Length: 106
Image 1: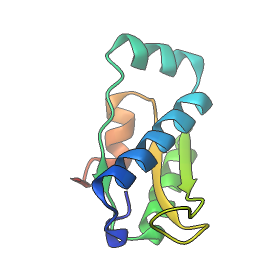
Image 2 (image 1 turned 45 degrees about the horizontal axis):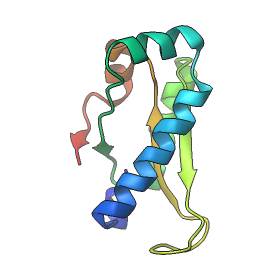
Image 3 (image 1 turned 90 degrees about the vertical axis):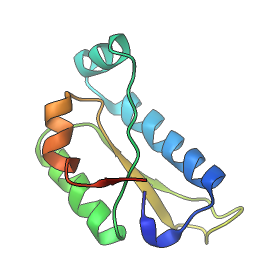
């Protein structure tokens, strides 16, 4: 989640949900199956800005992990085309931690 946007809680939850679903749809079947059987954990972290989000997503892509970036349609809170959040995984905890382990919880 991009901290600088200061999204209302409901909007932030919706955007994170979009990212989670999109990344799951892009995941390798084996990663998805492991994630589903392990309880489908979703951890919401914050990055300072869009640049940092894209940097983390690129690191995840380079590591072969499923990713998603969500761009808002602009019907409610933000302007159309605003990048709001991204997702990394489903993947192993170690793989995700290597990309995002230093980020703070929302």
